[in-house]
Image 1 (cartoon, rainbow, N blue to C red):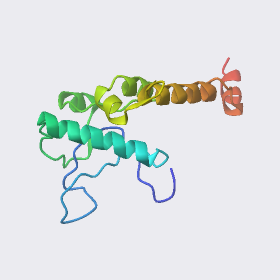
Image 2: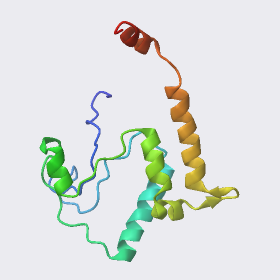
Image 3: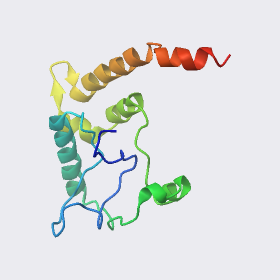
Image 4: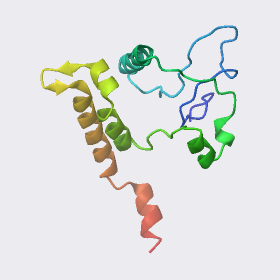
Length: 143
């Protein structure tokens, strides 16, 4: 974690009292990582927001609790799901999301989400196919 950075979030919630900007109403999205492509994240957020408006979805009451202090069963009972744990799992969720698929549109070869997920799966595989010196030190000595 970078100096001054906040812990990464692993749940999605509607923030109320904990928002940083006082006396302003709006949505604060703190789930997106700083390394993400800002154009893609904005387009995906916009598509999802417009879909919610079109569907008349009610976001519910703002969350004022610290979700890090809640147990996993409590979060599940409240309908709060964990975000994908790995890039591979995130790709699986992305290709299954029809709203983002429609929002990001297509390329001459198909939907953009399929292209993007293929690129990111290849990235994940390349990183995880390599045995690092740290893994050698740790795991070769266990057996």
